[in-house]
Image 1: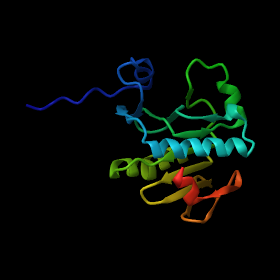
Image 2: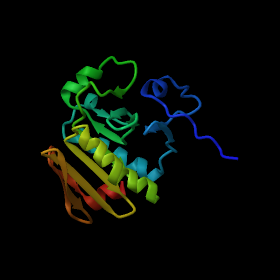
Image 3: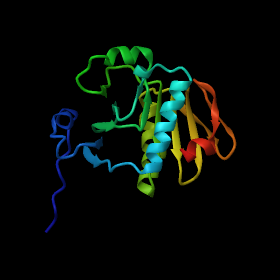
Length: 191
């Protein structure tokens, strides 16, 4: 006897679901993708980057952790990046919103950051699927922080495609939009 797959969700169904049953879940091609709690290291890296961006003069109202981001695709997909830097226009558009969601009719964020969780599936999601989704959404900059490979990959959108720069060890980290940051790849990965 075959087990029936759960029905695919639309964006409307995703937004109307009871979050008490599944509080943290991305929507990937119409299917709920549960997001387990992040590891301590994962949280330390994200917190360090949040603090670093504040020190670089980024206004607090432009930084978000856990914001929903609707991306384009064949089926409904909503990502929840670890850290998001909003453009000033997007921050104004979201001020006073009842739900922290960047819908497809809003401008894209300036930067999204993903910290890779262990496992091939998570790695594929961040390096392959999210890379193409974020590029198609027109997000100018995407960082992948990968503790397993001890590297940071910084993608810059150039003529519709991401160009990558990889940072490891004591290499100072450089952001195309933010310039040289005062930490090395190793310091960021240490959280």
